[in-house]
Image 1: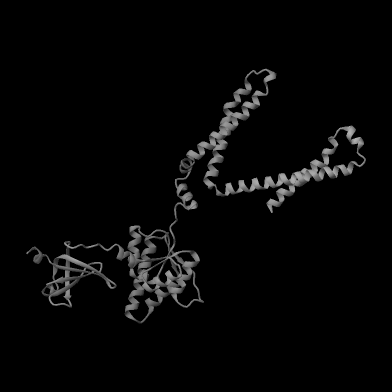
Image 2: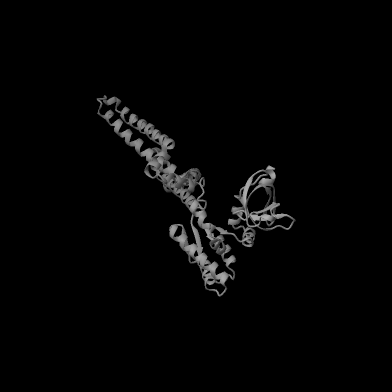
Length: 359
């Protein structure tokens, strides 16, 4: 629409110029013309063709300028405008005394020339300084402006909203992760997750009731500790049957990340291209790596499958198989790592008694 308007305006403007320009022809030529009105329309037609060509050039130039402005960050446009205004103000202040100088009348044309050149020079200087120190200037006005601009440019990614799953809330580790600052952004708790927690808390099954109440207690503590980050969302989808399907649908709608420790939900979400943060994967990733020769303290809890073996567990749940540990069930022992094995069920560490290794 704008392109057509530019071309039409230039065409009509030049047609009008061509129509009226006939009157500026010499009088002797006008006297030889038998039909002056026809000459006016012919002149208007040729001028309209010229205006059409100029309009096409102007339309192309307009599109280039528009594209350049659209690709220029808003803070650059703002700082350049401020630099231009400051440069012109300085030009007027510093060039004003020139007009008070006693210059002869024949050289009066020098004053406007100096004013124009000086204004152009100071305007260019102001824009150059804005390009160099613009972000520093904006930081003085608003310290958070740089981060906001980086987010707008895509250089800095904002924290994505996380949607908490029921199992993740009941697990409780999410609360500790928020305290340590490893989870950023808002934690969204949909209404259907609250309903599921309430149903668990009201069930007749003792184990499920304890889990439901634990989840509600953890959620209340998180809301009190992080009031600006825990958001209860009223979203619900009555046409979707399962809670997991509702979670995935909500994540797709808001482009969020599902926070869970449910293995099956993680697999289904990955198939549907929904980003997942699995707390179990995080715990597995940050488990300490034990190398042969490392010393551990472990309590032997039961006998192993093989003869003379004892089995204990570290705080993170890693199984430790202690050779010659069968006779020390119930005791806290210092053991030396001999090897480690990663299985589908988790990590297993094999160790010997420190006393037997030293001997």
